[in-house]
Image 1: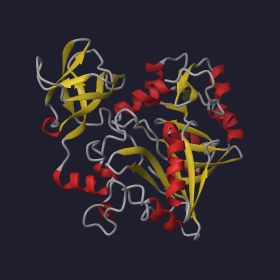
Image 2: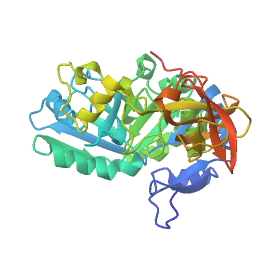
Image 3: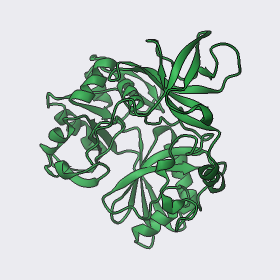
Length: 379
């Protein structure tokens, strides 16, 4: 959390204050951590009805090929990511990764084919570095446009479709990872059917000057509640989703992070466009030989949450640390503490006992399958 006095503000800052949010610095922005409802109730409300999240601090970036062909932009972007972008169909998006020369992850992002350009949503703390990376590598063939001023709302939960389709019926026809132009109360919006909670829902990109009005309008629906970053974190943890800077960073490879699924066969060894991205030699070698460590789910045996940073051990007493917890807390929907962390690959099978050091005591944990709570995406 940031403590500086000169934090940036999203277009919804005034609304957060009106709603009684507890604010704190996050990635340089003054953001709502929770509202009067509290983190636990906000979490459960999102799982059972719908929640509205302000994610306007995230970075939105457009990439256009100077040739006018979106495939040229996609092929250019593939020089920075192991993901198959060139075969992404118009109106679809997928999860992407920026890698470095040592095979580590510089950021994760979403990329959509918008027909004549690519649309990226990147992490708030990384967005300026990502923009610089894109401009340095792609400017000869592509135009890079930052849209850091736009608003971005996440509408998540089982009632999300009903709430949004009341304004534009086309929302109902969208499937998971579809991206469309919708209209909400006269405002054009770029909408993806995706999110960071494991629930069905949407991310809605809006002009900054209309974001407050649309958020207030959506919140007139009794099924919808404002949700802060605290519940966003517990929701994504139960869904087994990585938080950049915690579960993944510049020292973790996609294979170590258990993100092999995000690298399509066409970019792997033997694929039509194998390699050609930073760290390809390291990452593709790990595909063949495996990695020494692996990100896993961890289920504490007791009721006490095990937080990020706790050292992990193979034995209840003695021995050197074998890894660390990267995310941890209580899972309101799981009804128990949940965590993720890195362990040696030989100890990554579900059910394997691991011990976490919590204030000098070793607490038993078990390697657990991810996600802790099944996703409800509309496929």
